[in-house]
Length: 170
Image 1: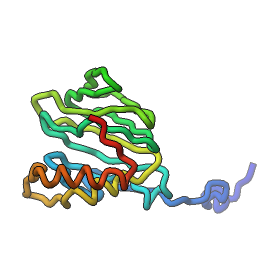
Image 2: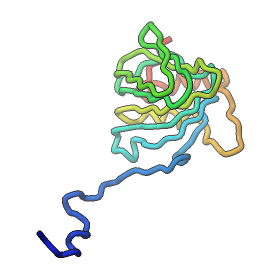
Image 3: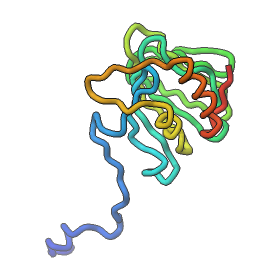
């Protein structure tokens, strides 16, 4: 048994430091995407292209149209609210505490069917979808309300989607 206190408290070379990402609560790049707000915690840039992860607040009735990610898996953890998911042609409700995994190539969508703003964490593997949200969204600022998408915004979504390997599938 060693009695050398200096070696007992020295940093271990067995566990080198990595590039840990830390966004304290309420921090991270935040954008309005229509009437929903997204705060990005992990992006292609800071995960070497492996993961996009965001926290979302989605108002009642809101959510994307049916779509497919041919090259990315998507997952959701419902933090609060009632989210209706489309899985191909059938739907189901995911409530607080639910986990939903959508394999790449699956037609899906989600919509808040509750009375209150729903909160969720969602992720993509591989990363890169944050570019879609950043290109079409607006940086969020305290005290400012969102502007719902206009017809011109929806047309732009259709034009930009292929750039991010997003296939709209109504």
